[in-house]
Image 1: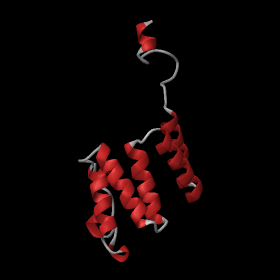
Image 2 (image 1 turned 30 degrees about the vertical axis):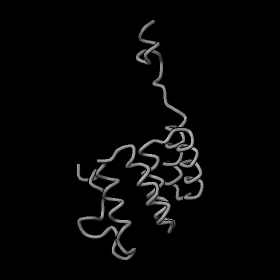
Image 3 (image 1 turned 90 degrees about the vertical axis):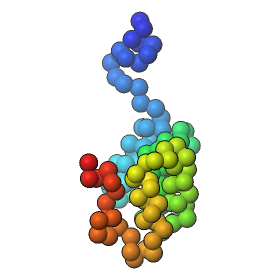
Length: 114
């Protein structure tokens, strides 16, 4: 009985609503449905402010030309994980003029080098 109470047993792992919405948003991004993905990420963050939802929404907002909103999401996510290298990288890229972003060694986030 103890394994069920802690979530260690049972048939499937428990996935929060915020995580489910994040997964749906990721699929929509892959399909090129940016506005629908943004809506899902908004729902995910409203349900539970998760680091990866903020990070993904910041990237999406940046693609949509909403730099200030993307920067605000980076700041909110950095309140959750102040040392996150991908967020620090993204915030640094947002600070650059649009034509100079994501070039050379800064083309990809640090996590892509792992």
